[in-house]
Structures are given as structure tokens and as C-alpha cells.
Length: 443
Length: 191
Image (cartoon, rainbow over all chains, first blue to last red; front, side):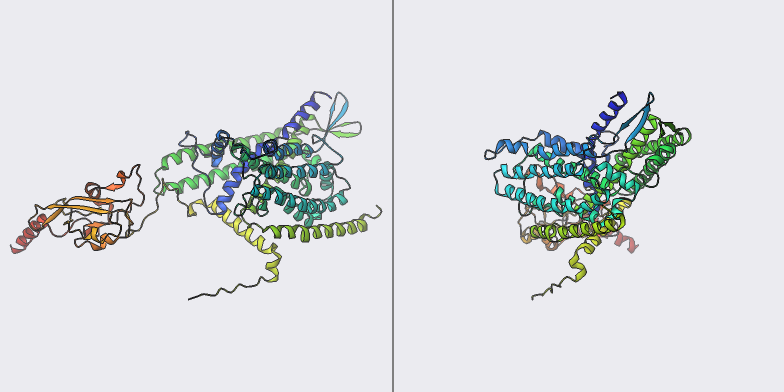
């Protein structure tokens, strides 16, 4: 392994922390999304003492919550089984850090160095078992809930743990069966193969729409969020984290968000083509890297300007009210919209530079078209961005579903899982198998 | 009287759940975009910085009305404290120097922690001396004593805060100065 390969390996290992880094953004998305859905404003009271109180769309509230959770007393009740009690919140978190190792972040890179072709795959571990490993790991994460419920030695926590284990068993079945149709078409469990198949043919959501819906709903159920949060069910039983306090409770809470990001990345990878950009694909991005980068930067710049315009409108309306903090808010919003405008202008300048100067030339090495290393790295970055945006859409779906639909009763969840989803998944598999046999023939 | 609510059976489409769930999701998304692009139309008010306008006849904190000479209109007749169901008004009377009025309050205290804001004092007053139109709906204090409003507190209000077209809310009939004013104006018409 040479220096370049090492550098890429380190970068891929760092990408494993993407779900962790996303936690604060997810919390902001959830809080602001929930409040806007309910016609509220969301967290806007915590502020830094600069520019008339900088609130950063509720991001400061995360810091305040974090400080609170970290400085609260870690209570270990006398009646708990101490070891499992302390280990339980760590399990979903540890699993969530392991799983991204299997996700393909970008297409395999081929580059030439000293006349020799090297290849770097887009994931840390390109396992043959691929998605089976992901399923195994996500099945493990329920141990956190079950152990937490059991070791708390409390009726209600135990009930929560039991419910979530029962739900894991029922939805893991339909989740596994629902994606079998996709495996049948692709002919491989490897996530890299699944993405490659989608970029050669069509996105998974178009060939397996039913499977997509079943998989998405099963994943929501597996995350244990509304409308499937019977494991928590605040009005009846508080759930598995009843006896937890301070940051141990915070770990459960953060594990939930890590899971959302992770599952969103998975759905995007399996049904929305993963890192693949339609029409262009990897070769297209490499050949027109400058133009693609310019288009992306222009989109960034335009959205920055749009946000700045929205903020100007908001502050103009606020100035008309009888509020007592008009001057402070004006300072804050002037600062933030100025930052956005600067960012937008920078984006436009970079887009111009990229469009004019970035034109990678391909060379033929050993009968293969090979682009220079920087072009491949740029393509990888673009593809990572594409995957990230697709995943963000699903992150929003998680928030949106939670704040729209009421919780199912426990028996409804069970009958939905066993009587409807399982049958639909099996029917989907059968139909896919028959069609695949007719279309492909042979094996 | 009992009202019987007919529980309608769900029809076939509603039983499938998916369509209704999609409708609900569309509704929440509509609310989200509405709040995102037009936050100024949301009903939420950033409370301590912004205050909603309280109606003029809202039963808020009390004030004592004044005569043109600045003395309280109150004649210490104890009607309000008699009418008060919470017994939060305590009055001590003293002799009035005004020739036409017999008594005036030496002490007039309202304990806001005891007051139920029913407005009966306002209705009981024969001389329109006590009103509850200050629009002050929040009160803050750090001890029980700090919630007791004295006569000086109740008289401490600004005429500019009250509607100018309502003459009664600024000055009052009766009293020595009014009497003099009435006499001088009568003399003026006599000329």
C-alpha cells in the first residue's frame, strides 16, 4: 500500500463518524421541523452573547442541552444490575459506529501511479455478506434496549424492553424479506454491487417500489420512533430508559439519531442509487468534473441567497411588531444574512473558477481510460455529497412521519408486522422471482 | 340533555390507512412550508419581548381613578370590600378635606395573591373609583408582601395609556375643583 491508498483509507475511516457528526444537525432538524409542523417557532431562547444574541437556528440549544446532560448526576439505582445497566446505552452507539464501515461512500477509484494501476474501493469493508452484516449489526442494537429494560429491574422498563425485542423480531423478518427481491435482481449481497447495478440499470425504487415502502417502514419501526414507539409509549410505560439519568439517557437519545442517519444512508444506498448521480454516473462526473462542481456550487450559492432573503423578510416583519428586542434581532440577522451572502458569493466565484479551469484529461493506461488522481478524488467528493443529500431527504422523512402520525397500539403494530408486511414481502419476492425468471431466463 | 355522537364505521379506503396517512402527512407538510416561508403568520408570540394586545374591558389589575385635583375618587364607602368574594381589599377611612365629600381612604390595599379578578369591586363602586382596565396581566414578586398593592401603587398610572375619547377614564365628576370649574363656567355663560 502506498501513501495515496493510506490517505484514502484514513479518509474512509473518518467517514464512519458521519452519523455521529450529524447528531446536532438532526436534533435541530427534528426540533425545528416538529415546531413548524405544529405552527410553533421551536427553540429560540438559548443564545451566545455576540451580535445581539446569536441563536444559530436552535443550534445553541443543543450545546445547552449537552452541558445539562453532562453535568447532571449519573444516578445508578441500588436495585439495578450494574454491569448491564451501564453497558446498555453503549451498545446501540457502538453498533452505529461499526455499521458505516460497510457503506459505499463513492465509486471505486482507479488511478495510475508510476505506470501501475491502483484501485481503491469506496467502503472500508467490501464484505461478501454485505447487507447481511448490516442486518446482523442493526439486530444487535436492540440489545441495548432489551438489556437496559431488563437490568433496570423495573416493571415498566422491562415491559419496554420486551416490546422492543418483540418488535425487532417481527420487523426484522419483513425487513429482510422485503429486500430479497432486490438481491434477486442484483445477484449479490454486496452493497457496492447493489449500487453498481442501480447505476447500470435503474434505481431500486423504480423496480421494487413495494419493497422500498416495506423496507422504509420496517426501518422506522426498527428505529423505535413514532408511530412505532410502543417500546417507549410514554402514556402507559415510560420504557426501557425509565431508570436512566443524565448522559446515559442522553446516549439512548443520541443513539436514536445516529440510527436515523444510518438507516437513511442505507435506504438511499439500496433504493435511491447510493452515490450514483443519474445520467452522468461516475464516468460522466469525471469527464465533466468542472461543470458538475460548478452546478453544485451554484445550487449552494442560490440556496444561501434564498435563505438570506427569507431572513431579511423575517426581520423586516419583526421590525413592524412591538417587540422589545428589535435592535438585537436586527443585529443577529444582519450578521447571519451577511455570512450567507458572503458564502453565496464565494460559491459563485468557486463555481466560475471550476467551470473555467477544471477540465481533467484522461490517459490510457493498459487499455483503460484513467483520470488523474485529483479528478478521481473530486469525483469521490461529489459522489459522497450526492449520497449525503439523498440520505438527508430520508432523515427528514423520519422526522416528518414522527410528527404526523399517531402511535399504533401494540397489537396493531404486531398485526401490521406479521399479517400484512410479512405477506406483502413474500408476495413481492414471489412476483419478482417470476418476472426475473421470465426476463432473464436461465438461472 | 345528552348528545349522542354517532360513531361512523370507517369505509374501505380509510381502513387501508395508507391513503389517510398520506393525507395527514400532506397536511403537516403544508403547515411546515407555511411556517418556513411565512413565519410572521404563525400565531406564536415571543412573549416577554412581544406582548399580545389585551382587550380594553379585560379584567386586569386594578387602578384607582382620580379627580382633577389628583385626589382619589374613592369615598371610602366600603362597597367594594363588601362585594369582594375573596376579601382582598382592605380600606381605612379618614375625613375628607373636600367640603362636598365626607370620607376619603387613608389606606386602600389590594392583595393580588388573594384577588380572584372577578370584577365585582368595579361593579359595586358607586363613584366609578376603581377600575380593572390597566391591561396589566402579569405580576412578578419575590415575597407575599410584594403582591400587596397600596393606595399609591393603585393611583400610579399614566392618563396617556387610556383612551382619550373616554373622558371618564381621565377625570371625574364631583369634587371641589370641579365644582369651582362648574361655577366659573356658569359665571361665564351668565356674562
